[in-house]
Image (cartoon, helix red, strand yellow):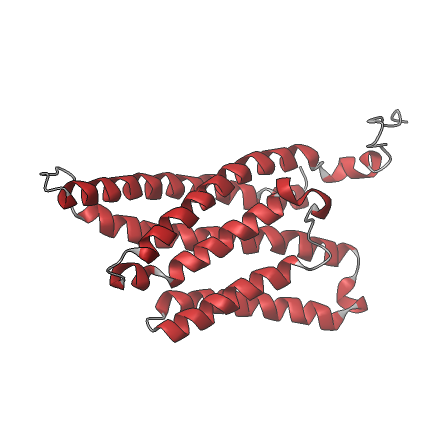
Length: 234
């Protein structure tokens, strides 16, 4: 494997080592938190400690940041590698500078989103973070599989990242809403996010099978993908 092949594995490696273990822990704490709430509301004596709710929020924040960070990393590699290969730095220096600025602004907005406490700043920084992800994803170097968006690793990932941003921005609303409307929205949206994560695992594995090693690329570009044939090696 060349260095470029190793760098291509950083995104899926971090997703496997960090994101999915955190996802399992957050899901476990979410189920325990809901079970404890139902038991206490029904007047039952529960053996589930109250700390599970605090752990759910704390680890959920880690999960959200990890998902957003992995999404940025997953787009940074193809953008940087293709820009270098196509000499975009000299052909389109303004766009290169713009993309770098958007990456920096997105990371800064995510940091400030974690620190924000008032609703207006939560809304501002969550919006800026989400806009940054979308603008970066619209760059031509990013493979989106637009013709098959319903099975696209990119679209699943962006949707999951946007839902994580929404979760970060609405934590205070969940605890302040006595009618539990925000809590219900949080549960519904994150159940959908869980389905997206399952889709991410399948589409990510599929894409890894489709991505060739750098030294194989020249030969594979000669293949006929419609008839599923490749020319014999010389």
